Length: 537
Image (cartoon, rainbow, N blue to C red):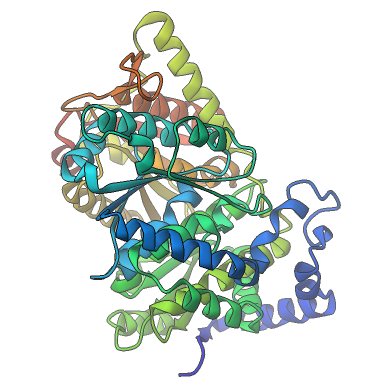
């Protein structure tokens, strides 16, 4: 196989996709996208013309490679062994993918901090050799509350007798002129990488946000960019977008992604890209990632299956064939090796832009993301005034309450499990068991995400789509709460991570209810997996 392969079996939708492709060609959509023609999506260029820098990253990042390589070599030479990347959404998902997919003997060990759960944060701190750890503070805007809270916490840990010069252990990746650029200078960060501001977060995998962490974990970033350049103009990217957009218009708006296990983290990156780009204005393509494959009869007529696989890693092929034989549309994308993910970044970004055109939406903004943030800030302000947070409406922790809630579901709906709890293997297993049980019983697509991580990924779609989601929120009590410093380098604290994550859960619940979404909250105390498992009895 000399290139990435795309094979599709679309059944009755084949003709419609062919017509879409013909219309795209007639309207010169692909040349216009490459020419930054904002009218592909909207007459107004706002948040379009200044968001298309990602198209040229395989070329524009070439001059940056020497500096990135020199930096990575200096980190190795200085004796660092670990990296903690503090970031959310587009600033963290590509680095996490690189760490889980490419890391080997010659790279640093990288973990992502994209949570405000106090137990998770303290567990990471205890498991990490802080004196040998480089911290990457990554945020486009410079003001992401989760990222800055984590920075202040880890800076104070280092300053408390661990190292003499804590600022030397920090690196910033941000846009020019951001508050983080100023913060990095104030605290004497080891380095600051300024990204092209004409790139949105979810389209930034091949920019500094992705390539600096990639180089640290041992990825050959030159090879990655070469694959991206080779795939960028491939007609399959437009075809993938035509399939996504056309089938979504025909009601198959649950894009169910199946991957080889070695590249499973790519699904999390696709999830943010597609959900945040298309979930708005009463529309949306819902990415279903990590849902266990089932028999054909557990799926409704709202699914599109896409199978991304490596050679000799085709464990799901037999099940996918059964789904195709049962009439479900499917796309198979065959990669030569993991470096073809460089090309997949470009394919999926182009495809998402094309799908946005087909659905008549603007794929580069996120108009509903701010609502949950505003409400969370109000919760924090109330806490500062009164010393406590509102309890929020909580359902009894029993199966009857869950099934009464799910009885509202209609064909074409989906269920989103939103877990504001510590992300542990036991919680992973409980969430997977619950989503499979719901899917098999109710024949509904299911998603699962940890809060606040998912707010920067699928949160936009949850409030911006056509309102066909049922949202099940889980909250928990920390075993040991952790203070958030008011200022890095100083001991004063007026809030804890426990207060922050509860504020975010309450804020998101209120934002969903304000949009008329069906929502239920279960509080699990400190028995997180047991509480989830109890709901299945």
